[in-house]
Length: 274
Image (cartoon, rainbow, N blue to C red; front, side, top):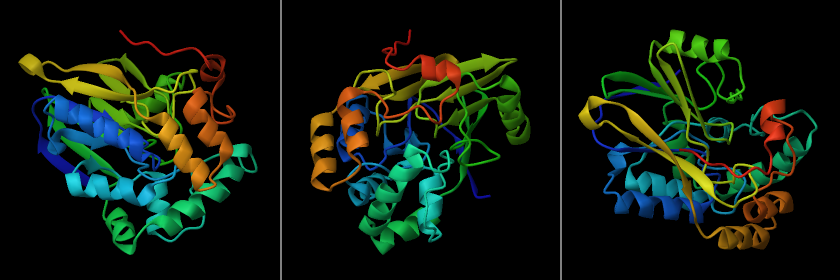
């Protein structure tokens, strides 16, 4: 397992995941970082730079050029090791699994050798000190890159990650839905993703800002508006999965195969965070 220690970070952090080859969303997020004067050294991506949408190479190049910290999601691991599937842990033979047989070869073929080589060098985990806390960054979980961990996932599963990582805060990705959950002095944060909506009936996508004012950790889940219509047009022009292209507009996932009952029941309910 490749782990990178970033040392001690200070000031606001911008955390996001799942770009999914959605260049329009990434460009909008970079503008937010510029407006908030957050340097690339304080921006963290939880992986899956590449996936469903139309511009994988441009997204990788933007992350590389800006110097944004990123871990490898399952897609980066699979592509960089020459695998023929995304290893997303979808239901075998389900709709997501079927769709992946279209978008994964497209993404793989669209990437330059330089980008694939860069993916191969990405760490699987990050760790750093922030606001007097030890923080770890994982994609799905410490134990399985493609593990889906949701808010409704039992705490014991999350606690095992804290125990094995020996940290107090985990920044995670992969599941596609933003949430925060704390128990017994531990804090699990998932920023959500910027490449696809959160199945809440709106085209907004999600990211997080962490702050360390007075050496106290605080965080906000924030929605991101971007040119989702252009992202949709790009997908249609590349003849990519129509269901995913439609999700960019509707904010509703084609199916809930990966979701537990609680998250399935919340489909179409617009997300709000205090």
